[in-house]
Image (cartoon, rainbow, N blue to C red; front, top):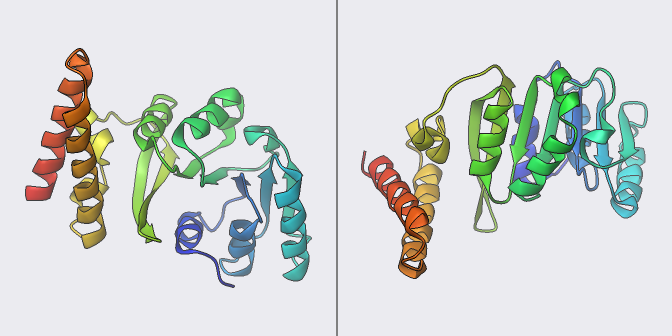
Length: 222
């Protein structure tokens, strides 16, 4: 089956023995991919909107896997079902992802792995999950339509990260491939542009932005 590169990369990072829940599933293509192409035994796809779930139901019927993909209309982690050990969320802002997690933290005790691809505020997501007792076990970048998306894999187990490692990504910062360099270069240009327009009264933000620029230049020149 054909799905976009971002969803396929997320799907390829899902542990094969897991019971995954995709939150904000849209048309359930990720869950279908996991069952049809990766051999996952069963999956849950949830969304809080009726229209995407209607299309998801049609897709699941088309691929003849109604017995393997369960659809749930619910908000965020309210869709948790017994046995689920892996959560995937993509295509929404990092702050929204944090709200979803914060609103139902009690269900996290059952979750071993979270695979998250925020559209923005990825640093906030990394800070939230590491505070909640997860570490970053994998990081990946995908480029589609000239947008570079981050994909973060969190696994249960505490680990301390310096601000530099959280900001750059502890796994990304040791990669030397072209997409990682481009990602950091884009970040560097954004931070330099921001520094030019920050009011002098924003002294803390100026200091932090200068520090982030230094980190990005170091990793690019290393």
